[in-house]
Image (cartoon, rainbow, N blue to C red; front, side):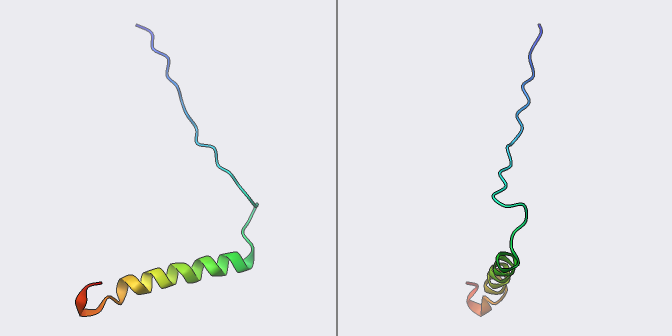
Length: 46
């Protein structure tokens, strides 16, 4: 039996070639806040 293999490639959408400096800094700050919230749960474990 011959079976056809279909290969699907995800399309990558680039809204901009590179994020601006401000966007990069905002993303880094948001990531740091998320990590801080995770790490600083305290004794309650939140």
